[in-house]
Image 1 (cartoon, rainbow over the protein chains, first blue to last red):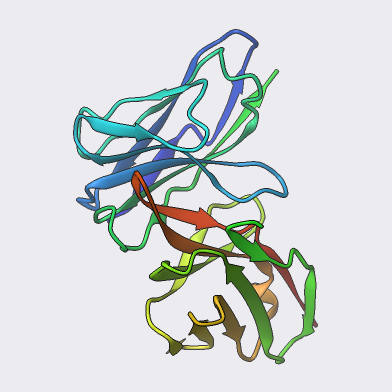
Image 2 (spheres, rainbow over the protein chains, first blue to last red):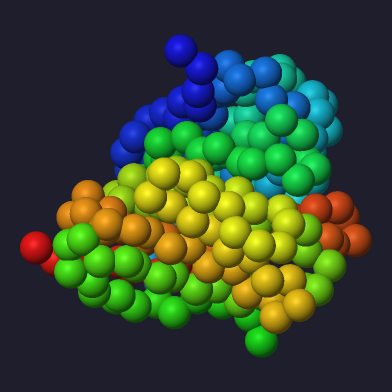
Length: 113
Length: 113
């Protein structure tokens, strides 16, 4: 059963904590992405990776970090430097970074306490 | 001017009617266009992709693309209450760092009994 999984579904963070969001895909896709969605706003790109061991900043990378050690996995760390981290975080993948469609995981809702 | 613009709605249509959702974009070089459906609290689901001028039909959905006028639309025939969701328009835009999928803020559709 191919798809994208994200965990956890809900995450609560205290001020000053780093947290890591998991994203795994078994679609054999080369490219993976992280987006953030806030109410009333479109999806905004945080980071993307076109190939293992390579990734680039998106539009709002400050306060976030990623790694891409395996093709299947693209975890996102929300650091304490991110001033307003409460949001819905979405991971996506595509066959490559050409014109191919992007498919989304179920998302992680992060709340700062 | 926003790169991808949609009317936020809500757009209300009676059950069985045709729902028409519109999207305009600013980059004349865009080649790929997508419609996603997002239910409240869920992640976006790809429902249509269109790459060339004209109409593309898939079941009750028809995507229409007019590159000269820089708009793309989604028609939903025989609208059902289960179609009530937010519909996101996404456009692949060429940037200095490669292709970037840019999303509109979405149009909320309500199908009323």
